Image 1 (tube, protein in one colour):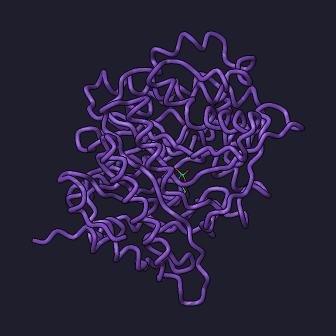
Image 2 (image 1 turned 90 degrees about the horizontal axis):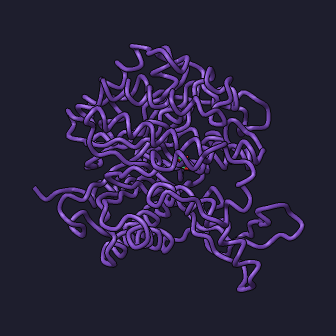
Image 3 (image 1 turned 45 degrees about the vertical axis):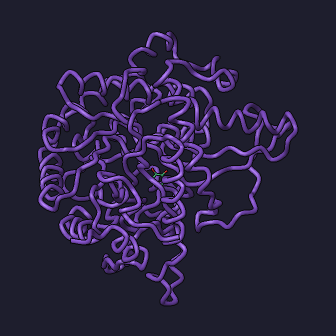
Length: 442
Ligand code: FCB
């Protein structure tokens, strides 16, 4: 199915998303070390042991990259401002870092692109990681200082600010599963990170509100949790996964509570007096960002400790990440968010996309599967809107092939191909299909 911008209400925003560490090159411009630099420099953590030192060299090529967004007829660009670039030691400002984002934001405005800024897309300065990172409550206060410093400089020009990208990845994936920096597998660290990342969000919102900054939100990731069978145990496994990834953050923010099904495992490990923070965490927001990629099928695992579950491979066609393609999940979450949590509050799909292999056989930029993925998910957005979800925009992940965290550079999510030897950018057929769909007839 091919849709066009005219199938959506006037004012609906189409954009593409990136994140600082994945594209900029952390070795340029006085950027400080982050836990992603050291995590990726440790054997076994990232495929081929590659980090984000150069990445896509966006630090030097940002103008051409903004031109690509503009030429795709996009309305908005979701980018992030690296904490380690702005504050190399986690505390003091690096003027060159702020200057870079200043130019970048002006470059967006000059091209008619709305800047959708994310404050934390995961590059925690090493100096703060040394002090315990997200297991340390102090990091939350430092984050509010960072939010203030960046907003002081850019806040007059950005269209919106998200505090944190995907708190589940920051906390659970990184402190319980251990797949992302800092690579911990510790339930006490995980419980603390699950709470502190939300406290950091709340303190930043409080600080930015005090500055009069409008249009504040957060970007959460959602994963459709499917029980492997109808058995009560498998349904509990799916409900537990749903609690950990889909309910923990949104319920804290909208209802100031944590789900009982998750507290069953985490309660003994929570920071003291966590309840006292819930009011700060639960401040009203202006919009919610929904990131959606796939579903997971969960099976009860009686031999495992809490949360007593394991993932089972599913039958649907998969992306290069091995993720099942399931657009229905996007529709479900958008409708569920509106119905159960945010009502009429604007929702943006802040990330959705697929990785496809660069097969080296000339098929690199011919990616009809990505085009189909994109339009099928846009159709799901439309259905959710017809069912009452107040969705105001959709951002494809990602503009460019880039550093895909623990997967290194092999997993390619871009509308634009990046040759990592020459750093040349080549738009793929999906890019051209999207540009056609978004063209205005004037
Ligand atoms: C999300 C991240 C983003 C990217 C995509 C594929 O979890 O926010 O940086 O890696 O997945």
